[in-house]
Image (cartoon, rainbow, N blue to C red; front, side, top):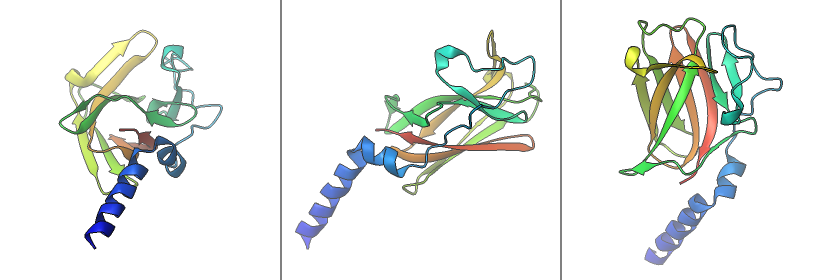
Length: 163
């Protein structure tokens, strides 16, 4: 019996370590083409340096990889992967309620919640306009659905996080 448990543990570890398998089983969000075009004064296309496209609606949008998000090489501290996410809204105000980003692991049972609000998490940059910055702490590699909520809008997408 102990040998069977050890064999299952080895098989599961090998499966989790195979990034090809992760990508094949994860229903990555592929933005529609042509992609969302945000309202003025925001740029109609995401800056080329990010190799991304806009995804969402005027109420809440972000940038996504046009082929689906595969997050690799993320910094890992105390077993948690860190990533910064940028979000935009046509009705963004630094004085408004916070933006919340939650994560639900689709191939496991882990989850997280990150909240950001106030002027300390807002930013402005030429080519990006005013945006909200939220750092997320992802507790495990795998397939993740992220959902952002701001005011009366929410937006979800699925990414693969490689360990």
